[in-house]
Each structure stands twice: as structure tokens, then as C-alpha cells.
Length: 436
Image (cartoon, rainbow, N blue to C red; front, side):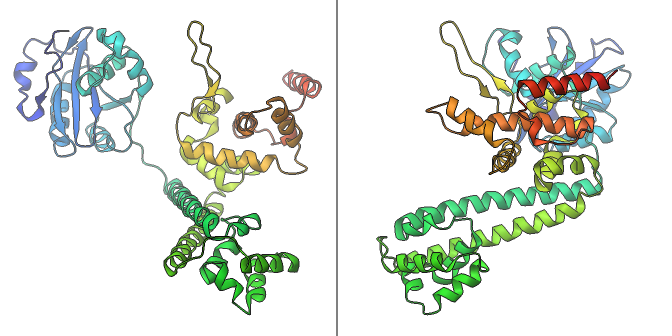
């Protein structure tokens, strides 16, 4: 391609008559779009090494003009495909407009675009005009998939809304509790040994007293702690908390310090209540949806709803490995020459999926769980390593099991995640005998 191949021109200056003058009637056309927040770059691909200069389209002001041009280009043509990368929600306006105009929209993987950049013109650099040309080329080569903007059933929209709300409040709770922990370590470090910062008892105590000095001076401290904990704290524990409040080594609080802790605790408790409200709504909304019902015994209803919202129905995946990959839990390695890199998870897709799967893995290693012995052995084998590697192993096995549960109709059994060699052979033999 020449040096001016990527020099762009405004879409409102395009003269389609002159552009189509030397083109054959019925010639196929692939249109690559690089979507940006304020601008889109559009490149027309007629055949191998046959591109038009990029068009600059203001987003969303000139979307209608672009679609009008595409409708004129589609007249008398056997095939016209508009291809783009999944760029959040910035491309949804164009997808809807194309759908209304009966123009086919395809999706191209951003990873494929990145990897093909140097193959395309011999230069690894990427910029808007080139990215649009690469997307069009990949669509012409058949490396794209249909991507229409479907309307989602209202029941699924409700689940998506409450999942989004639940996860947003979870992030807020995590932020506020992190700030509380930092302030507690400064002003009341002894308290962190007794209660977690996410504990409702801790949050209610901070809203009421905001520090050790006010708790120590309150004659009704014992009854209040019993009420905050709903009598879950023993008398000995309550007395110990009050005694340590009287003798704390923490930095003395000012009025501003107390106000800060009280406000943090108020926000954290509100987020915690919002999470509970969202989980209750999800429990009632998800009852009619079979994939969520299938996943719930394994990971809980809230996590099942989030997985369904972010990843869709597990039955739509051809195999368990594809479902694991969609979660970003597939292993990748970067090695070259003498350098041999370690295996790591790819972390593709939504981070929220991996976070809630992590929580599900933590629940599976509780006391008396059939998964706990494997977890402890794995930690012992990886001496000097954090427990995270063992938890990732559980997450990967759990993800594979979830596909079998939802797509194959198998019952979830935590003992089958790490059955051991003898039990694994028995299971394989039993499955083969069932298959005939």
C-alpha cells in the first residue's frame, strides 16, 4: 500500500458516484469500522489489496449519513458486510442503524486484529485507519461472525440490571471496607483481630461509636454490642473488645477522624444492604430460567445469574474448554528461546466473572468440604507459593464442571472435581458403559 493509503477523508465529502464509477455491478464489498468514542474510521475493501481511503465519521452525529452511504453501496450487490470490533457500547448505535437498514453486521476479534496488523502491511503499528482496513480484510477472509443487535427478553434484562447493580455495590463495599481497614489500623488496630471490616456488627459499631474512645465511655456498650451482633458475640468476646478499647495503642482520634470512620461505615453498610436486595430480586427473577437453575447448586444463585449474564447459556459452548476460556481461566505460556515462561491464566473477558468464581472456590475449601484435602496438598506441594495457585486450580475445575452441569445435565458433586486416579478411572468407565 502506498504512503497515503491511510490518509482519511470526511464522510460528508464522499462522492459515491465517482467512487463507484469503475466498479463492477454486483461486486462484493466488505466494510471495516474502527469504532471510537467520538469518531469512527471506515474502510471499504473490494478485493485483495483493493481498498478505499478511510472515511472519518463523527459518532454519533454522522451515523445516519454513513448508513445512507452503505444503503446506496448495497444496491445491486450480492453481499455487503459491515465488520467491527466489540468496542463496549460505542458501536451499538451503528449496529442498530445497520440492522434497521437490513445491512449485515459482523464481529471481528480484537486479538485477531492485533495479531494480523504486521501481516497486513509488514508494520506492527496500529492506528485507526489501519485497524479499520485490517477488520475489513479479516471479514473478507472469513474471520468474522454475524453480530446483529438482538432484543433481549425483558426477564433477561431485569436479571442483567440486578446483576450489574449487585456487582457495582460489591465494588463499592470493597472500596469502603478497604478505607475502613486503613483507618482502623491507625486508630483501633486491636479491633481488626475480632471482626472483619465487612461484618455488619463492625459497621454498626462504627456508625454508633466511630472509635474506641466513645465505646469505652458508653455505659451501655455491652447491650449495644449484643444488639449489633444479634447475640452472636459471646460475653467474653464483648468484654475483651471493650477492655481493649479502653487500653488501645491506636492513634488518638480527632472529631474529623471519627466523622470519617462513621461516614465510611454508613456507606459500606448501605452497599451491603443493596447487595442483599439485589440477591433477593435475582433469586425470584431467575427461577424460570433453566441454565441458572442448573448452575445454582454449584455456585449459588447470585454467581449463577452473573455467569449467565456475562457468558450466556453454557449449552451454547461446544465444549467445557471453550467455557473455561470464556471466563479467562485457560492457561497460556510465553516462552522464547532459552526463556521458558510460567503458565498463567489468560484473564480474558469480564473480571467480575473471575471474582465471583474466586468466591465460589473459597466456599468449596471450607472445613469438611471434599475439595479441602486437595487444596491443602496443593498448597504444601507449592511450598513458598501463595495459596492463589491452588484456588485458581479449583476455579478451573469448577468452571469445567459447570459446563457439564448446565450443558450435559449432570448433577453437581464437589467430590468429582478432584476424584483421584482410581475414582477418575471408575467414572470414565461408567460414562463409557452408559454410552453403550
